[in-house]
Image: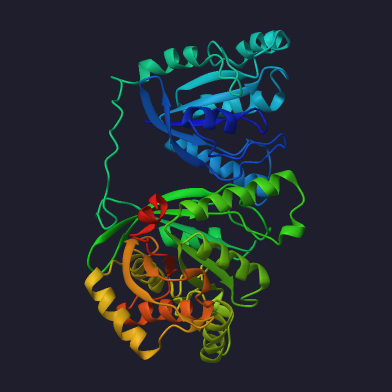
Length: 456
């Protein structure tokens, strides 16, 4: 069952969404109009489970205006919903805008539950009584922020459920299981075309787009299925807010948006950094790429607006040279040129994403690793420090996502960074693990005689 939360701006829709979802998924701020895209999440109230949809605030505006395009997002959510939770601000009472949209909901034919939010104090009593005038039945006095009145909401929802849905038991899913969704975050600077690209990928106008920079504020997830050459991949795409230079981020709301984007990067498996073909590899692009790699995410570079590039061969050569020079921590990063507006080159994006994802999950046999280590040491032995030779005796892979290796090394703290880089690059070349972060941890071997020395 899909339930949409609707109402004018700043009545507490996102707060109720977070309350029912059980986590802070949607941005919440006192500024009206924070939510601009519709966001879906798994909601739970008692033993009832459902899909909950947070929507932009309903406003009267021309369709071409930003507010008008936001209104269209809400119209789609209402059309897809089984029922609507119509929220008003009980402290402010019923406004003319509430009456207008109450009438629209009545005409939609969808079942509506009227919620008088912010009813935690006696100052809201008059507003709750005033809500009867909307003609949408008995209003429920609730406080989304404090969790009050949710028992009444549970009772109101019960008739729409034939029987309570049992909570599914989470099972461990292997990384290459065909049922496991691949989490892909689309990140980049403001106005790089992230939302337009996601809409083009899924083939529908799911996300709000326009000429204005910084339209997206929340990180919105969209579920989609990609039909690859060998299998079908369930994918969860995350459209994120554009990240500007830290010095330019002043408002609290933009700080919340950036924090939401950072969270999307940390929980993603593959990060697609969308570059503008007219100004690629700016400082902010490099900082976003470095952040994704430091977090251990698989990274793909997508160069957007390729349709307006004139000399494409020369431009691509320059892009590859810059990627190798400016991002040496992940040599061989895949670069996909495309146009989110026209769809040109889009067929190359998901193959690059899935190939990088496979490398990110690469596992190497311990015997093969130590055979390689012996050859690498014979070609170029570790340097001597203070007259003593550093010895590396054993190496093993301890985890994947990203590939992580631990080597037993005497005087590990003295091993030069250049030699450590030589080993990491050797692993890349020998086992064909390209374009993903590789972590090499040097561990001092335990001294088997340490306990005997202590006894003496």
